Image (cartoon, rainbow, N blue to C red; front, side):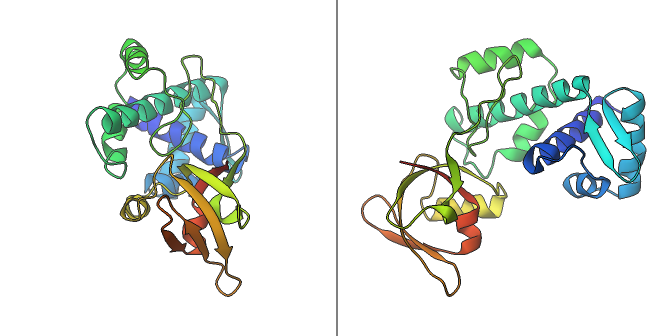
Length: 221
């Protein structure tokens, strides 16, 4: 059981419980994120429970202990800071950075992480709009954030994040010039298929499927 495997499991549990507001992450949900077998997950959770990093109950799943949560937040902080660095300083596109940041997040130096944070001028959000924990583990979440799909017709908004950070979806957004900070206006939502029509800068209009609109996070402006 190496440290990288431990960190991957802790981060997966954190991501599942934070996204769903559930207390426990199920074995099947963890297995899906880590692309492994449920039996392997059960074995690892039992080991992490003995190490005091998770609280595991058969058939209920696992939750992070205080120590496990602190470790997972630090991993996520590193991952998201590296994503900012890759986009802002090295010119990577936002659909290219996740796998690289996955490798960088396992660097153990806290001093390097703190210096990276300072070098980037303490960013609050990563290139996908996800909040970056600070040195103390505090997480600043977007206020008044809603899915684009829920923006009322005639209302203006600015894109601040995505619910789906898959490479395919990010490339789809880039193709249509939909990125963080882009101002949009909801023109119409169609009852037939729940697709939406939005206005982009330059008065260009764009039709989006309901699935796409539900995966774009905006703040009303």
